Length: 263
Image 1 (cartoon, rainbow, N blue to C red):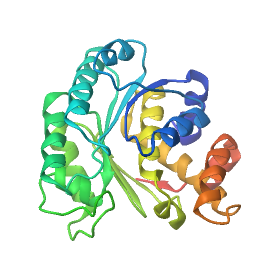
Image 2: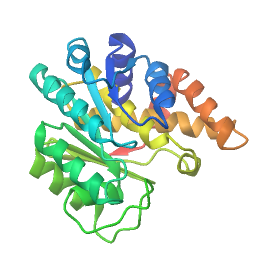
Image 3: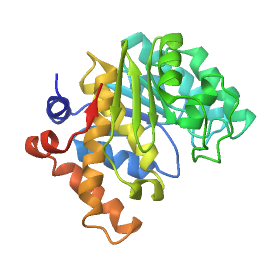
Image 4: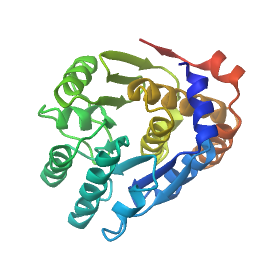
C-alpha cells in the first residue's frame, strides 16, 4: 500500500462518513470529505444514529461543541459501528480544557471501541493520563515526548493514535509514522483540525486494512493540498477555499513528489 493508492481507494469507493461533529466547523468537515471523493453525512439525532451507521463506512466523533445529549448519540453510534466493524475516529477536541470534557472523553473511550484517537499534543496527552491544560481547543506546550505518548496510548487502547501539529505523529499497529507536510497557515484557520479528523475517517473507511497508515496517508494528502493552497492564498480567508480546491487537484505525480511521510 502507498499513499496515492489510499487516495485512489477513497475516490473509487466514495465511503459514506457519518459524523457527529463540531457545529462550528461542520460545513468544512463535510466539504473536505466531499472534495476527497467521499460522501459526508452529519446526523446527530439519537433517534437515527444507529440506522445511519447501517449504511456508513466510517464514524467520526468530534467533541468540539460538547453537550450531554451529544454523548448519548455518539455512544450509540460508536457501539453500532463496532457491531459492523467500522472504523471509529474520536477527535478529543478540547480535552484538557475542562473537567467536563475530560470526563466525557473517557466515557466515550470506555463505552465503545475507539479505533483512532485524534487530537493535538495537549488533548491527546490529557486522555493518555498526563496532567496538562489545553488552551480552549488550541494545543498547549507539553514537555513529554510525543512519540512515547502516542505509542503508550496506542498500546493501552489497542488503537491508532494521531497527534497533529507542525509534525504529525501516528502510532498504531506496532508502527510509528511521522508526517511533515503542511504549513503554518493551517494553524491560523478555524476548522483545519476538525477537517483533519474527517479526512482520517474518510481514508480509514476506504482503507480498512491498516488504520495507522491510512491516517498518515490521509494527513499527508490533506497537508499537501494545504501546501499548494498557501501559494495561491492572500490570507486565511482565501486559503480555506483554495485548500478545498487543491484537494480535488491532487494527482499521483503531485502526491509522490510532495509526500513527507516516514516511519
